[in-house]
Image (tube, rainbow, N blue to C red):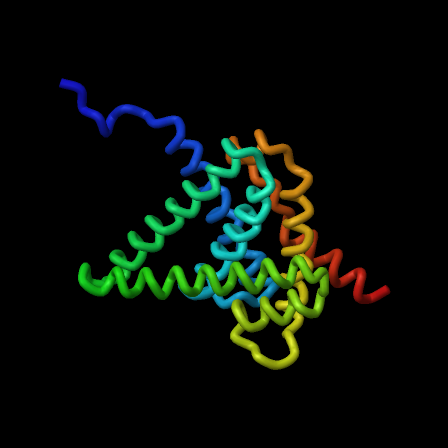
Length: 189
């Protein structure tokens, strides 16, 4: 008898690698120390959503075999959120309702970031980041401006990456410390 869970699924391993790269980038200390993103479950969720949105936005224009990875990575994100809710003590009966809130939060943020990136307005993107990540509904704090600069740079890095590189889970996100320094230096000149 073959014990199926012991068999390796290369497709699943690839999806796990891509999602793992998103989570690893989202957990970089620079976002929480230098940018001021709240180091809370909500702040970490926002950073994962931000990076996932950037990747899925990039994959929309890829060939079908690569674009289909986007749905699989999104499904992996949903499984991760479900697992996290359960680990945080959300009961089995409450998980579906909590997952609806997660989906609404994801789609609302993704739409806001996508529209702001399409508008190519630094102010629009900083305002979207301020609302979604920092909870600010007034002038964006410096951290939101820095994060908006990072988002634009990350979108450029992903756009320049070859489809096969992304499909292997090598996501070329920039170093947030370098982007932050560039943003500060640009503001000072």
